[in-house]
Length: 257
Image (cartoon, rainbow, N blue to C red; front, side):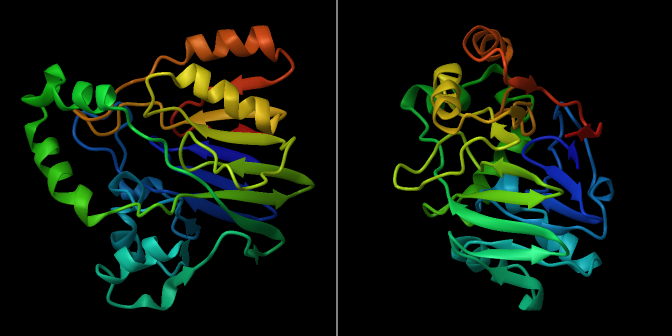
């Protein structure tokens, strides 16, 4: 099984001869991992964790050029239907529903989006790079209300080649959902909290994965995003859970599990 990170929350999973792409996004000007739509494989179906612009915006353009299927919640489908002429490639799923792509089994679980504190919002709104990336800020101000999350963040469990992967859409867990513990790999977004190390450790304590791959830690859409220092979390993991390896992937470089 092979995992490739393409910046932001864009992750490609390859297993059982199949490809599955999560949350494809092309980074805005000044992003720390500049990419293009051509970086994403043309034959990979897509799963969306939630409807925010940095997870969904480029999906309509990908559908114009490719014969692929897109899976997501009702909120995601409602947004896409306003941007896609032919909705035959859109498949609405609900938490608890499973389906197969070849021998790869995918299950949608109810997730939760991290809640931004007032301090986080104000800090991001008044970053020094606001004037430098003013065009990005204008785009995000226009796009954000058109791509709502609507309280429908999903997580995905992927089972293939005798292994289990749990991919979260944001750094939070739904309190009423029973998540699979002991996954071979937890894909964990590392962005959006002031207390990210503490929040991540709380998730690890509940899920006890065998291995962690971080994503969404990069500065993908300045001036709103930022490069997150993951070293404090890695140090805490080495002390508390030395048996759990934490991987900070490099853009476009596959990780084997």
